[in-house]
Image (tube, rainbow, N blue to C red; front, side, top):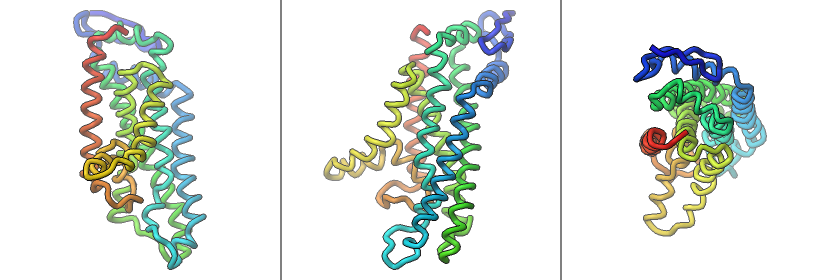
Length: 272
Protein backbone atom coordinates (compact mmCIF):
# COMPACT_ATOMS: atom_id res chain seq x y z
CA UNK A 1 0.00 0.00 0.00
CA UNK A 2 1.06 3.60 -0.56
CA UNK A 3 0.00 6.79 1.23
CA UNK A 4 0.58 10.14 -0.49
CA UNK A 5 -0.31 13.65 0.69
CA UNK A 6 -1.66 15.87 -2.09
CA UNK A 7 -1.00 19.59 -2.35
CA UNK A 8 -4.47 20.18 -0.89
CA UNK A 9 -3.54 18.32 2.28
CA UNK A 10 -5.63 15.26 1.47
CA UNK A 11 -4.18 11.83 2.22
CA UNK A 12 -4.65 9.43 -0.68
CA UNK A 13 -4.18 5.77 0.08
CA UNK A 14 -3.97 2.98 -2.49
CA UNK A 15 -1.90 0.21 -3.96
CA UNK A 16 1.52 1.00 -5.36
CA UNK A 17 0.47 -0.16 -8.81
CA UNK A 18 -2.85 1.55 -9.18
CA UNK A 19 -2.84 4.35 -6.63
CA UNK A 20 -5.91 5.50 -4.67
CA UNK A 21 -9.43 4.56 -5.67
CA UNK A 22 -11.76 6.89 -7.54
CA UNK A 23 -13.64 7.86 -4.37
CA UNK A 24 -10.45 9.10 -2.73
CA UNK A 25 -9.46 11.01 -5.87
CA UNK A 26 -12.93 12.56 -6.05
CA UNK A 27 -12.70 13.75 -2.44
CA UNK A 28 -9.27 15.24 -3.06
CA UNK A 29 -10.43 17.09 -6.17
CA UNK A 30 -13.51 18.35 -4.35
CA UNK A 31 -11.26 19.75 -1.62
CA UNK A 32 -9.19 21.55 -4.24
CA UNK A 33 -12.26 22.95 -6.00
CA UNK A 34 -14.11 24.29 -2.96
CA UNK A 35 -11.11 25.75 -1.13
CA UNK A 36 -9.97 28.00 -3.99
CA UNK A 37 -11.47 31.50 -3.89
CA UNK A 38 -11.56 31.78 -7.67
CA UNK A 39 -14.15 28.99 -7.75
CA UNK A 40 -16.60 30.96 -5.63
CA UNK A 41 -15.97 34.27 -7.39
CA UNK A 42 -16.55 32.60 -10.74
CA UNK A 43 -19.80 30.99 -9.58
CA UNK A 44 -21.03 34.30 -8.16
CA UNK A 45 -20.21 35.95 -11.49
CA UNK A 46 -22.15 33.20 -13.27
CA UNK A 47 -25.26 33.97 -11.23
CA UNK A 48 -24.95 37.75 -11.47
CA UNK A 49 -24.39 37.74 -15.23
CA UNK A 50 -26.82 34.95 -16.07
CA UNK A 51 -29.75 36.05 -13.93
CA UNK A 52 -29.01 39.78 -13.78
CA UNK A 53 -28.66 40.34 -17.51
CA UNK A 54 -31.78 38.29 -18.23
CA UNK A 55 -33.82 40.46 -15.87
CA UNK A 56 -32.26 43.63 -17.27
CA UNK A 57 -32.96 42.69 -20.89
CA UNK A 58 -36.54 41.65 -20.16
CA UNK A 59 -37.15 44.91 -18.28
CA UNK A 60 -35.64 47.01 -21.09
CA UNK A 61 -37.45 45.21 -23.92
CA UNK A 62 -40.82 44.27 -22.41
CA UNK A 63 -42.65 47.22 -24.00
CA UNK A 64 -41.16 46.53 -27.42
CA UNK A 65 -41.81 42.77 -27.22
CA UNK A 66 -45.47 43.48 -26.49
CA UNK A 67 -45.80 45.87 -29.44
CA UNK A 68 -46.71 45.12 -33.03
CA UNK A 69 -43.21 46.16 -34.09
CA UNK A 70 -41.50 43.29 -32.27
CA UNK A 71 -39.73 40.81 -34.54
CA UNK A 72 -38.46 38.59 -31.72
CA UNK A 73 -40.25 36.24 -29.33
CA UNK A 74 -40.18 36.84 -25.56
CA UNK A 75 -38.81 33.31 -25.39
CA UNK A 76 -35.55 34.56 -26.87
CA UNK A 77 -35.03 36.79 -23.84
CA UNK A 78 -35.97 34.72 -20.76
CA UNK A 79 -32.54 33.04 -20.70
CA UNK A 80 -30.58 35.73 -22.54
CA UNK A 81 -28.09 36.22 -19.73
CA UNK A 82 -26.97 32.60 -19.98
CA UNK A 83 -25.26 33.46 -23.27
CA UNK A 84 -22.91 35.70 -21.29
CA UNK A 85 -22.69 33.37 -18.30
CA UNK A 86 -21.06 30.76 -20.53
CA UNK A 87 -17.90 32.88 -20.34
CA UNK A 88 -17.60 32.17 -16.62
CA UNK A 89 -18.14 28.45 -17.25
CA UNK A 90 -15.18 28.56 -19.63
CA UNK A 91 -13.06 30.37 -17.05
CA UNK A 92 -13.90 27.87 -14.30
CA UNK A 93 -13.31 24.89 -16.60
CA UNK A 94 -9.89 26.26 -17.48
CA UNK A 95 -8.88 27.08 -13.90
CA UNK A 96 -9.82 23.62 -12.65
CA UNK A 97 -7.08 22.17 -14.87
CA UNK A 98 -4.53 24.78 -15.84
CA UNK A 99 -3.92 26.32 -12.40
CA UNK A 100 -2.18 23.12 -11.33
CA UNK A 101 -0.06 23.11 -14.46
CA UNK A 102 0.87 26.74 -13.88
CA UNK A 103 2.02 26.12 -10.31
CA UNK A 104 3.61 22.75 -11.05
CA UNK A 105 1.32 21.05 -8.52
CA UNK A 106 -0.01 18.77 -11.23
CA UNK A 107 3.13 16.68 -10.74
CA UNK A 108 2.13 16.05 -7.13
CA UNK A 109 -1.36 15.06 -8.24
CA UNK A 110 -0.04 12.56 -10.75
CA UNK A 111 2.52 11.24 -8.26
CA UNK A 112 -0.35 10.59 -5.84
CA UNK A 113 -2.60 9.19 -8.58
CA UNK A 114 -0.57 7.26 -11.18
CA UNK A 115 -3.81 6.39 -13.02
CA UNK A 116 -4.12 9.86 -14.58
CA UNK A 117 -7.48 9.11 -16.13
CA UNK A 118 -8.96 9.17 -12.63
CA UNK A 119 -7.82 12.75 -12.16
CA UNK A 120 -9.43 13.71 -15.47
CA UNK A 121 -12.64 11.87 -14.56
CA UNK A 122 -12.84 13.35 -11.05
CA UNK A 123 -12.28 16.92 -12.19
CA UNK A 124 -14.82 16.46 -14.99
CA UNK A 125 -17.51 14.93 -12.79
CA UNK A 126 -17.23 17.60 -10.11
CA UNK A 127 -17.22 20.47 -12.57
CA UNK A 128 -20.20 19.10 -14.51
CA UNK A 129 -22.21 18.66 -11.30
CA UNK A 130 -21.44 22.14 -9.97
CA UNK A 131 -22.11 23.92 -13.26
CA UNK A 132 -25.34 22.02 -13.89
CA UNK A 133 -26.74 22.98 -10.48
CA UNK A 134 -25.55 26.59 -10.63
CA UNK A 135 -26.63 26.97 -14.26
CA UNK A 136 -30.13 25.66 -13.60
CA UNK A 137 -30.60 27.82 -10.48
CA UNK A 138 -29.31 30.87 -12.35
CA UNK A 139 -31.66 30.30 -15.27
CA UNK A 140 -34.63 29.90 -12.92
CA UNK A 141 -33.75 33.11 -11.08
CA UNK A 142 -33.40 35.01 -14.35
CA UNK A 143 -36.71 33.63 -15.59
CA UNK A 144 -38.52 34.57 -12.36
CA UNK A 145 -37.23 38.14 -12.47
CA UNK A 146 -37.49 38.65 -16.22
CA UNK A 147 -40.91 37.08 -16.56
CA UNK A 148 -42.24 39.54 -13.97
CA UNK A 149 -41.75 42.38 -16.46
CA UNK A 150 -43.11 40.30 -19.34
CA UNK A 151 -46.21 39.47 -17.30
CA UNK A 152 -46.86 43.17 -16.73
CA UNK A 153 -47.13 43.58 -20.50
CA UNK A 154 -49.33 40.52 -20.88
CA UNK A 155 -46.68 38.41 -22.62
CA UNK A 156 -45.44 36.33 -19.70
CA UNK A 157 -44.41 32.72 -20.33
CA UNK A 158 -45.49 29.75 -18.19
CA UNK A 159 -42.81 27.49 -16.74
CA UNK A 160 -43.65 24.53 -18.98
CA UNK A 161 -42.72 23.03 -22.31
CA UNK A 162 -39.82 24.78 -23.99
CA UNK A 163 -39.44 27.27 -21.14
CA UNK A 164 -39.03 24.50 -18.57
CA UNK A 165 -36.62 22.65 -20.85
CA UNK A 166 -34.53 25.79 -21.22
CA UNK A 167 -34.09 26.00 -17.44
CA UNK A 168 -32.36 22.66 -16.98
CA UNK A 169 -31.07 23.01 -20.53
CA UNK A 170 -29.10 26.05 -19.36
CA UNK A 171 -27.56 23.90 -16.66
CA UNK A 172 -26.73 21.19 -19.19
CA UNK A 173 -25.16 23.68 -21.57
CA UNK A 174 -22.98 25.30 -18.91
CA UNK A 175 -21.91 21.85 -17.73
CA UNK A 176 -21.09 20.88 -21.31
CA UNK A 177 -19.05 24.04 -21.83
CA UNK A 178 -17.12 23.39 -18.64
CA UNK A 179 -16.37 19.82 -19.73
CA UNK A 180 -15.34 21.00 -23.18
CA UNK A 181 -12.95 23.47 -21.56
CA UNK A 182 -11.49 20.83 -19.24
CA UNK A 183 -10.54 18.79 -22.31
CA UNK A 184 -8.91 21.81 -23.98
CA UNK A 185 -7.15 22.63 -20.70
CA UNK A 186 -5.51 19.22 -20.52
CA UNK A 187 -4.47 19.55 -24.16
CA UNK A 188 -3.02 23.09 -23.91
CA UNK A 189 -2.04 23.21 -20.19
CA UNK A 190 -2.16 27.03 -20.26
CA UNK A 191 -4.88 29.20 -18.68
CA UNK A 192 -4.94 32.13 -21.07
CA UNK A 193 -4.54 29.89 -24.10
CA UNK A 194 -7.37 27.58 -23.02
CA UNK A 195 -9.79 30.42 -22.30
CA UNK A 196 -8.91 32.20 -25.54
CA UNK A 197 -9.31 29.12 -27.73
CA UNK A 198 -12.64 28.05 -26.24
CA UNK A 199 -14.16 31.55 -26.26
CA UNK A 200 -13.00 32.11 -29.83
CA UNK A 201 -14.53 28.81 -30.89
CA UNK A 202 -17.80 29.32 -29.03
CA UNK A 203 -18.45 33.02 -29.51
CA UNK A 204 -16.43 34.28 -32.48
CA UNK A 205 -15.98 31.46 -34.99
CA UNK A 206 -19.53 30.30 -34.37
CA UNK A 207 -20.71 33.62 -35.83
CA UNK A 208 -18.01 34.05 -38.46
CA UNK A 209 -18.93 30.81 -40.23
CA UNK A 210 -22.16 32.53 -41.25
CA UNK A 211 -20.02 34.09 -43.97
CA UNK A 212 -19.32 30.70 -45.56
CA UNK A 213 -21.69 30.38 -48.56
CA UNK A 214 -23.86 27.49 -49.65
CA UNK A 215 -25.09 24.32 -48.01
CA UNK A 216 -21.66 23.63 -46.54
CA UNK A 217 -21.77 26.97 -44.73
CA UNK A 218 -25.28 26.26 -43.45
CA UNK A 219 -24.21 22.95 -41.93
CA UNK A 220 -21.01 24.44 -40.56
CA UNK A 221 -23.07 27.00 -38.67
CA UNK A 222 -25.30 24.27 -37.25
CA UNK A 223 -22.42 22.03 -36.18
CA UNK A 224 -20.20 24.60 -34.47
CA UNK A 225 -20.07 23.60 -30.77
CA UNK A 226 -21.52 26.82 -29.40
CA UNK A 227 -24.33 26.94 -31.96
CA UNK A 228 -25.23 23.28 -31.58
CA UNK A 229 -25.18 23.22 -27.80
CA UNK A 230 -26.78 26.56 -26.97
CA UNK A 231 -30.21 25.88 -28.49
CA UNK A 232 -31.16 23.69 -25.54
CA UNK A 233 -30.78 26.69 -23.21
CA UNK A 234 -33.44 28.91 -24.79
CA UNK A 235 -37.17 28.39 -25.50
CA UNK A 236 -36.87 30.21 -28.84
CA UNK A 237 -33.40 30.65 -30.40
CA UNK A 238 -32.51 33.89 -32.16
CA UNK A 239 -31.43 31.82 -35.19
CA UNK A 240 -34.33 29.57 -36.28
CA UNK A 241 -32.11 27.66 -38.73
CA UNK A 242 -30.05 25.90 -36.06
CA UNK A 243 -30.52 22.26 -35.07
CA UNK A 244 -33.29 21.29 -32.65
CA UNK A 245 -32.57 21.50 -28.92
CA UNK A 246 -31.84 17.84 -28.23
CA UNK A 247 -30.31 17.10 -31.63
CA UNK A 248 -27.97 20.06 -31.26
CA UNK A 249 -27.02 19.09 -27.72
CA UNK A 250 -26.30 15.53 -28.85
CA UNK A 251 -23.94 16.91 -31.49
CA UNK A 252 -22.27 19.13 -28.89
CA UNK A 253 -21.94 16.17 -26.51
CA UNK A 254 -20.35 14.07 -29.24
CA UNK A 255 -17.85 16.83 -30.05
CA UNK A 256 -17.01 17.15 -26.36
CA UNK A 257 -16.57 13.38 -26.03
CA UNK A 258 -14.11 13.33 -28.93
CA UNK A 259 -12.13 16.15 -27.37
CA UNK A 260 -12.10 14.39 -23.98
CA UNK A 261 -10.86 11.20 -25.60
CA UNK A 262 -8.02 13.15 -27.20
CA UNK A 263 -7.21 14.78 -23.85
CA UNK A 264 -7.11 11.36 -22.16
CA UNK A 265 -4.72 9.96 -24.74
CA UNK A 266 -2.42 12.98 -24.51
CA UNK A 267 -2.60 12.99 -20.71
CA UNK A 268 -1.37 9.41 -20.53
CA UNK A 269 1.46 9.85 -23.02
CA UNK A 270 2.83 13.30 -22.18
CA UNK A 271 5.00 14.24 -19.22
CA UNK A 272 3.45 16.47 -16.58
